[in-house]
Length: 199
Length: 199
Image (cartoon, rainbow over all chains, first blue to last red; front, side, top):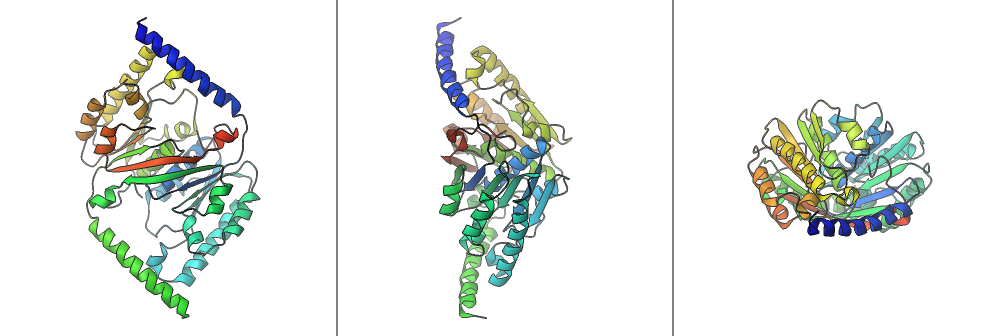
């Protein structure tokens, strides 16, 4: 064995010891609240990846899309007909599309009532509240009411909330929070939303 | 209509004009190179969400997992048997697990050769190079060789690279880059990787 290989082994052995100790210390299972926020690409798509993972274990997932427009998008085409998926569209696009605050509030509330039912159903392993931060920011929904339902959910149920500018109450209550920073986005180079990537 | 509703309409009308102008300026289609980096949760799961979106349009996706361990994880269970998915595991875990640099290099190279074939196949709409940043950082693979294959790919093929500490050459070449910051992670509270969320 060359010296550099031996040095490599020694270095990785030390690294492995540190990683193994951290893994040994993490032994609990818990229904997690995850918040994916920030202005970069990857928040909703990450939530849909977790839907795929959940289905991979034969478990059920429920997705509530609070803002998405009416267009047929890839994730809905792919997941919404799966027998273990509940898929609800809870809005008709960003509020500046509808230009009708009362209608937006009614759509958000109707969506939230369906989401609340999923949050009390222990047969659902993962609840995705996609773009829920916007109806909170616009005060269509009260964050206190949302937090109460999330806190009262079945103990092993996971919840993922996506959207820019997550409310401090969501951040404080979450187990895992990722802030996704937009370093670069093809949109600013004149590339429109690409099928399979952005929608 | 109340005055506040009128004010709301005027504000959203202005917002809509700005958003519409940006959307009108983005008219091109392009095969994108996306880099999802940073130390937060959501990089690989976002890539898997894009696999779901791609399949939702009836298109093909290829996933190369460069580091993942041997365990059966949700994403592989869910996607790997789909007829429009190529799924390849190109490593046996982090290098500190195998403790064998030569074997890790051989596994990374063998995986890269398969990925390179996908990068020259125009029938594949999306190529995910999951955790590719690690074999680059460890110098198992040369970033120049990887960049050359990515630049020579079919023009409408999308490529997603995930992993911490993405090389500057990847960042520079990418169309879209998200840096995912770990604000909080349940792991540090003693919660182990949860099925459906982290694996």
